[in-house]
Image (cartoon, rainbow over all chains, first blue to last red; front, top):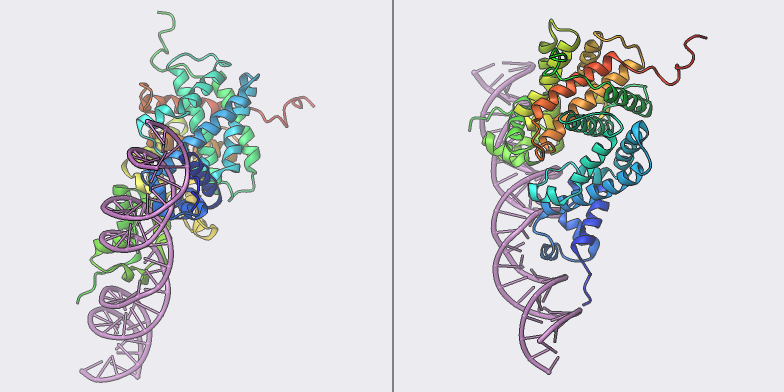
Length: 198
Length: 198
DNA sequence: TGTATTTTCCTAGAGGTCCTAGGATAAGGA
DNA sequence: TCCTTATCCTAGGACCTCTAGGAAAATACA
């Protein structure tokens, strides 16, 4: 019998597609094997366990997201860059909910280092070049942006904004306005304040 | 044989405890039955399915979180209230990761309405009384706060802040400082700007 | 108190998932 | 051509979800 041509790459891609269709938690080795026309036991020649499947989807999603982010950032700066980058996150989560969910799974340090996670923080720091922030404020700002983006998308996807007539799109725009203002008026650290003239 | 005394309340409580121990995704009907000393089939007299278990943990967590939030808010206002409330979220997620994860599961509209979800947004609005915001800015601000709190906690729990020496505690404090400033300098809506003097 | 009803728990079992062990066969290289 | 390796198979154990139908405890009621 001819072989099915299963590879880890095709597996990850199929798992990502499946995750977008039925949700990450419903991505099973069995269903994936079914889609490839092989027995589920056969997939264990390519992956160690079901968890690795999710990790591979996570890595895939982080890379796709980073690519989109980089494209969005090209030729932009300041608030323009901030908004474009933020929309990449939100749009990606809308188009690929399963992949986006996967991107939040905890990765072991080694996998995390090999992933596009670093590119994400680097891009955020690039955005912050439009605002004058030095360490450790820059790191704190990266974390604020990451938190706000992910938190908003996460709550929106979970239906947290559906109990109120105010549109999510409008809130999103205002949240980005506010973050822009916040970055431009970044507060002075309590450690430094009061020592300005000494 | 004497009965085990299983009730939906005790089940939800036990499921919440189990979730904190082994993670929400590992909360199974079987394990729960084992802890109550009954057969797994017996639990289906109390709950419809495994999903209901998670929903009940979610409702429980939302209520506990709302209680803690209310206690933290008592006698506080302005930034003091903001920080106290935010810390309730973060501390709860630290103490009860499984419960916190459950609080993010999507609830059907009916369950959501009967849950403490409304109390949460009401408390956020109470905090915003310390800042002068009118609708729809108030709703947008509630969403920004919810996003930032949840996003930070979520990323922190997923290990997203472990690849950098900057401590999460310090960033958290600065993020709250920034949110406080942002709320006090809430940007004028683009719809209104330019019409100030007309 | 005795009886009827309801609730809780049981056994049995179907069907799904994960994963391992060990064997067969296709593909590619010496 | 033969050997090696990778891919796929069958078989099966362990665990999970959930249903059906029955027994027994608790409760309600006469």
